Length: 163
Image (cartoon, rainbow, N blue to C red; front, side, top):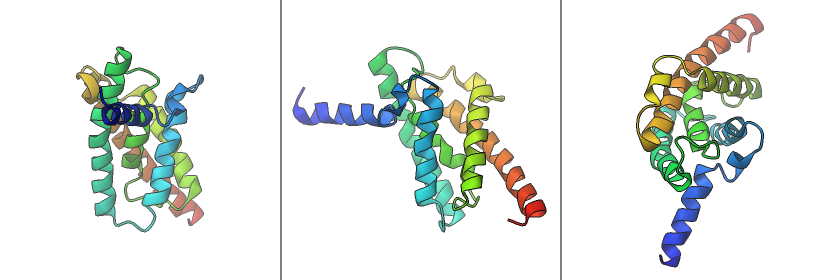
């Protein structure tokens, strides 16, 4: 294998593990999701909702081959160290919401993790898909549930707290 190919594999592994966050000894998925919060905080404020949707879908599409590579490299279905599915699906749960508000990012972080853990229908069933598809699609569906929860939270806070 030449140096460029080796470098490419290392880059994909680096992305798959969330720049090493996936090696966290405690809750690697939760720790890895922090990159998603940073992505949203840097990209979404002031971005038109149509662009937010496009960016979110592109990130989900990019996550599939990255996670597929991580799974093949480790040789285990949906390994804990591979957290690209966590941070690259997080933007889905913030579409149209005020990313400039830290409280909203915090609420989204919590709902994203809860929905990823409980995996409401059909997210859990989608884990049977092979490779990166099974790793990412269930998280994308869970993120859509999180998006619905986040909109309810935002509307309630706006109505009762005037934010």
